[in-house]
Length: 364
Length: 163
Image (cartoon, rainbow over all chains, first blue to last red):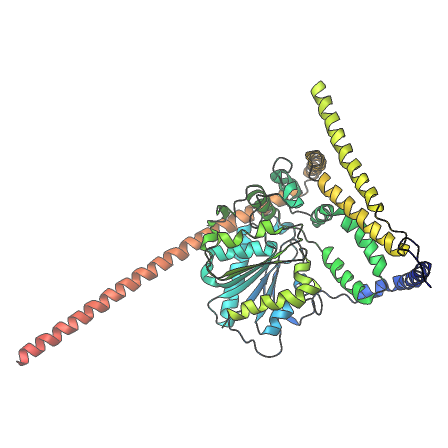
């Protein structure tokens, strides 16, 4: 008869646990030499695509679906200037782009390219009223459509929002992901560190010119040092024997370490006008000759936010819905992080079908 | 002098308090260790708990004015060093009559200004063309109205003549 009390050690369970862990460790060690081979299998983007427009460093990709698109209005993805955009099409089963292509949208993505010293003096106006306007005009002409749908992620969402406020007549629907609008709260570390008492944006840009990719990467890393430098390698070692985990990990790490420089003047404007003076939320953000007034946005708006986002907490994104004049607007705060919102397994199972359906209902 | 010393002591005390509390919290994670469960799982749980506490402490520390002052000093130092190095290189390039980064930036700026001026002019021209178009449309409509009126008068006088 087994009369073990709750405080007695279960030696059998201990023994089993040790044995299991030993064999798992052997599997882990045996998997390590295959990591370089698995790294070779990482692809930057999985949905078939073609380049349809180029201007300076910018390229516009058109994603090729099976058959003709069902909807007339084209959908244009706008990503941030700080990373490469293939996060939107990361891998099979984790591709936001593929969801929309499958749903029948004629889908495009703006790849801003990697700025060089020649792009040092490009401003937000060049991106919003220059490049984006040219791309939108091209897409309208290509599809014979009066308007386009815009989907912006992070800084791309800010650019899309500014574009829509200035050129509302060209935008049919606006979807934004993890897009910071109101930077008054200083909840995010990145936003806190840009406080004008501690960070002189003018001195920084005047000295550095374009903002180096390494600087941005260091800032992101420093905002979560324990998670990035300790937990992540431990997590990898614990799961290195699991192929799916390693594949996901390598895809993500490839992208995370693929930062690009940011044109100096764009960075200056974002740091001073957005992070430090919070002019966008006050409807006083200057973009070239325009002052961005979010009240001029009247099109349907879907605002997707990540509850556990350390870079752009929901408190920075949520105010957008109150600042626009749109009557058809929705917000979803999803339990994920900044990147998980776009590529997480649960996001793709539950969130993205909803987001795609939202756009389908507002498309002809 | 004593103000500075007091400030330094206060900062050191705050720093010490933060990290002492962190160590205490990490130790309290271990108080939840249960020898009954298999050690591998428990150690994993303890490790997770400790790293969570460490992460929270670092987050709190990085929000302190002391840390931000440290970051500011470090960044400004690096920028000043870079600026000095660049000025030195510019002078060297000048001596050898080679183009320096400053010269290249100057050329880029000049191109930007020309581009901006041209674009502004083009936008202005665009607006004038749009205005002209509108005026021409108005004139066209007025002419069409007058022609229509003239036609009707012509028809009316013909009818009167027939009567």
